[in-house]
Length: 50
Image (cartoon, rainbow, N blue to C red; front, side):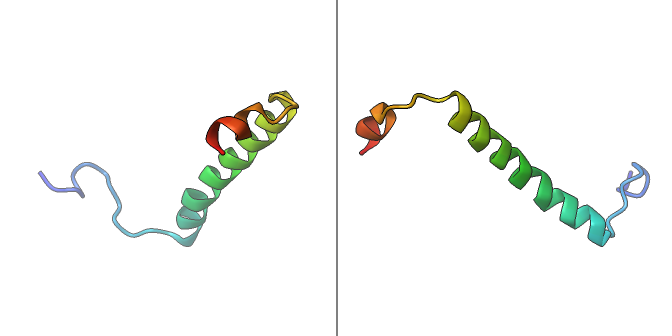
């Protein structure tokens, strides 16, 4: 059994490469924005890791 038998196309299209890099960046930005909106307003976390 080879990869072609599994239906896996080894040729990467440019849009696939862009999506592969864009989605993690967008998810990171969303998580940072959510933490900024819902996180504590004081500096308690910075004091723990500072």
